Image 1 (cartoon, rainbow, N blue to C red):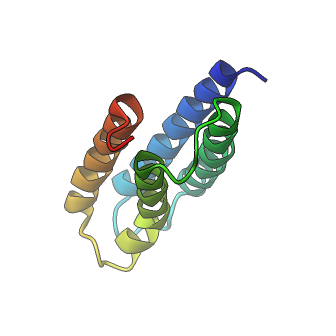
Image 2: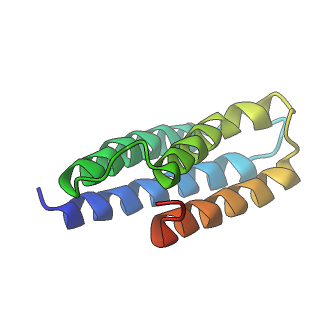
Amino acid sequence: MSPEIYKIAHIAGFAMLLFGLGAILCTPKDAPRPKIGAILHGSGLLVMLIAGFGALQKLHIDVTKPWVLGKVFIWVLLAALPTLLRTGILPRAMGWVVVVTLAAFGAWLAIMKPFS
């Protein structure tokens, strides 16, 4: 596959992840967790991981570059976010801010590729 296909899949996975987090964040605290939110969140994480590393391999980019490691760290934080929200470690209102901040920072890392 071409690197562009991997990039499109990576963005599609990111959209799935954001829709899943939105469903989780919009559900009242005492209501049961929506299955569609969890499914979208997990599927989006998987698609992003496979497509992201596939694109890196096709573009011959070293995975130890600081901007790549930063994106992996953001991916881990986004993966843990539903658990942090469910356990009350992170308040729901702060969850919205964290999601937008992590998304913007991840986009900045991907576009600017600092510390290369």
